[in-house]
Length: 346
Picture (tube, rainbow, N blue to C red):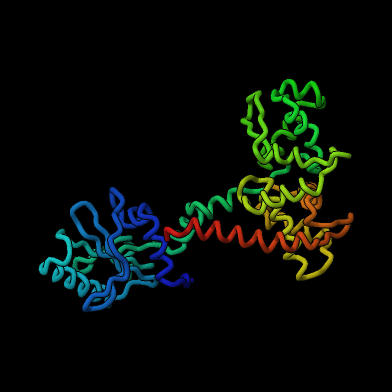
């Protein structure tokens, strides 16, 4: 069954990805985009490129070959030749290309029809290329929550306060904190994912970031082991402003968004519903295969969100807090703006 899509959307992708145009036309180098939807005496030209000493005239279709398309291209080519004669267009041999989804009776991918190169392409492959290679989309799809083995945010406080006190060596931290090397690694990794420390794997040195220093200053003076209101607010603000900063941050945001979405069906949101939906929403369907893996990950990230004041929960149900609703709306706005800003080149 042929794909239904507007030609303008395929044009958007080809303009933003010259390497894709190069591959479709079987060129040796990437062409340089010149103009799009150029008004001509005989119509509106789709795409015009320069390539070495040539001009490439592209007519894009999302349907099979028709003879009238060749006639249309010939008219555009004559218009361009007239512009060259009048000095209104750079000189160079004009090569005409017709991009179609099927090439008539022939099975060959490319054939010549009246000096027009008819090239078969697949719109689905163009869309797949865009989705996998567009930087903001790739960032969104590649960043996924991880099961890091830390059940609550306050469990990293002992680590943070040792760093605040001047202990900046992994070896020294192990002496004070005890436990297995794996547990310490998980705490360090989790703290790093929250943006509270500067650290590189396999290095001994760890330093607090500006956010980490501010976080330590916001500790509860009576019960420093607990997560204070000021610390929760600080993390909320950072997560909302940096939704793609790390796997843990995106996981927290995704957990709250998942509860928000599921609440349209039933409220409070059953943990059983949340486990299934969060697995899909977080892009972990092929990673969290067992019920135990789904439960552990869902419990972990809803714990973080509860620590931050974004959710409330029992063993069976999850609730949105007023701060959680505000957070979700603001988060969706921030994520949308970041994607839009990154796509301005289209």
